[in-house]
Length: 159
Length: 255
Image 1 (spheres, each protein chain N blue to C red):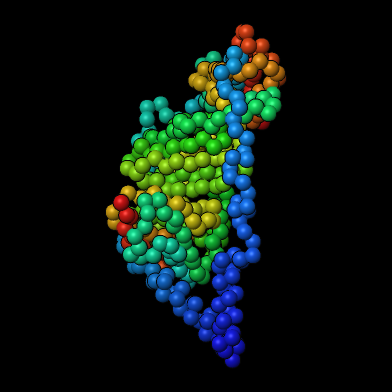
Image 2 (cartoon, rainbow over the protein chains, first blue to last red):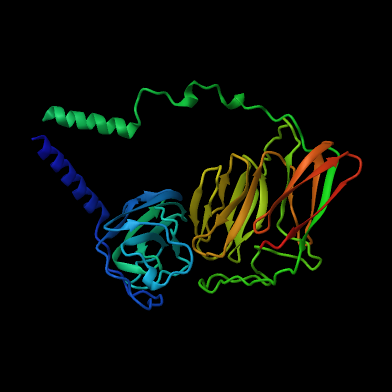
């Protein structure tokens, strides 16, 4: 009986996590330059741990990301070739007031994307009061987007 | 079964609450007044002036690679500030401070904040100093998104995103630390260094490599020079309080 209870608890928790994470949105056509060699397909997801879609948040709020099916890792230093990209390794990117980029493009090192090349998953984010759209998108060692590994949420910043 | 669920609940609650048997350390400690109140003021008669120069062929100014963000409009003459050497070989952005010699003197933390501005997709100033506990107000005066990521060794790390048109964000470092870097993870060329000291006797060299530190009490001091690329060096100086003490130093190109 004890094993059944534990299994039930784990299954329930997993169901909650999946439900909370939501499915990755279908990305619109990106405006970035396509990478020369698209990255391999990934089976994982990325999501917002907090805030959640529809939340009202403070003008300075903590944003936290999570992932499944991939290993979050700092980007190796130096210039990398496509052959040196580590399979299954990702890092996060936060897009502020934007949508997901299409799979296989390089995430720009520019507004509106903050890169988390150090492998971390938390940031404090200042936002003006009003509605905002936040995107978390995974990138490989060359900052290339991966199929399905993006989530967008809508939040409202309280005055 | 009810017992198992109860046990799980208790364990989870205890883990989430971090245990209940220990009081927070601060609850039994006396109020913050136990920290010694400042007893000294920076109005002594001593002055140290000096110039820091560069030995060797000065590097050419290197433009900043701002092409990736069309919202980054370089200001006229903006270039990398990693190593800036003037026409007379004066080195800009050397942080000069009293490293030793003040003894047990303590100084009040200035109420006026230090401003760190993001403008033209650069941090302004590139190198600056604050007293431990003094507020740094970080402002984004660009039209683009920045994030401000501090990488301290002795202080608490922070990382915040700051779009255009939001108020300046205050941050404080509590412990002395030299050469504490700030970086922007949106624009990889952006960097700045804050130097946190426990007193007000510091300066940053200007375009000609010159600096001045005022208000010192007479005494013997160790002055340290710090530069992000050229490293550190120290010099002993004596301040008599009657005439300014002049100091000269030079850095060589690192091999």
